[in-house]
Image (tube, rainbow, N blue to C red; front, side):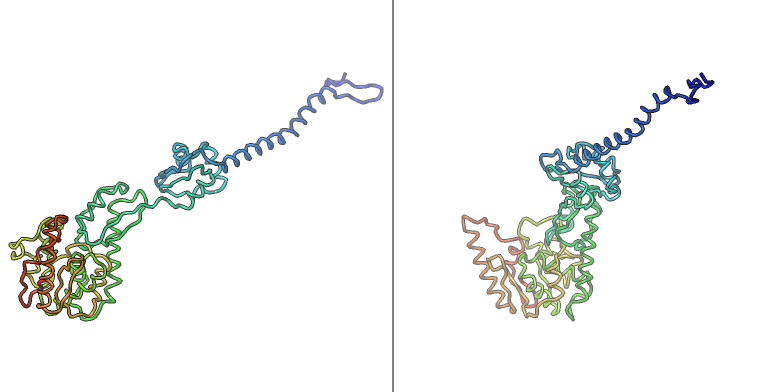
Length: 378
């Protein structure tokens, strides 16, 4: 036996290392096969994860998920898991990281389709096509009425802003995403109104009796309240432009109503004689020119009609019983139109199928007037 413990053959001079070989062979085998086994396991896990990532999801119906701004990948995965549109949050996170999509997932409110895979969800979040909500401000509403719509919207968030000036909002349908505040949507309405007026004002007709953009909005608001028929807006605008050029008083009933209600809503009754005779800043039967402010928020069509009215000689109009108005150039013709309207109103009052106050407040106020020369009497 040698000093190191190996057994030697004195005759041949060779030494045997059997004990070492006994340990070395299993170790070499393990070193060779372990990476292979590990690779197979890793490949299996990868293939399983890839399959699960692209497999149909668990949601049986479309599901709305709201991802607030500032969420990280882990929080997003948890939200999706809690909403039952993703079964394995770990696989979702891993798939996103492998696809290098972590920084491109966008906040928003999303409708995840039924059975959407994790790959589908990642694509949806990267595109950022969140649910679009809408709010509509009809033409002719006052700022108080418009703010009631904004306040009542269930999706908008935040406190109500200060009441915007009358005529500073553009009536329109506005798209917005969840998370938009009430202040932001009102600001958009004001910016849209300013942008529209800045676009239309330079292209106005020459020699208009309105000298400033604000005066144009005031007159457009009166046109807006006088008729709800789109084809009549230019005709109504022409009447008021012709009157201002004369000059003649506008004699517009909606201005009186605004002075009485302060823009809080319709009058709900005919205008009284005392209100027609009363001197107020908004009584255009008593004041010359325009009232001090708009009486509503006019739409694009009314603003365009005021800035580019048709060339007519009309100075009067009155309801014709069909929902529209009869226009006339002379007081005599106008009085005949008024007489016809009185007959229509009389029949509608006597009809059992129609309420006695079928006529609008503005029409009811017009009928008693015997417009002398130099007055509108519409």
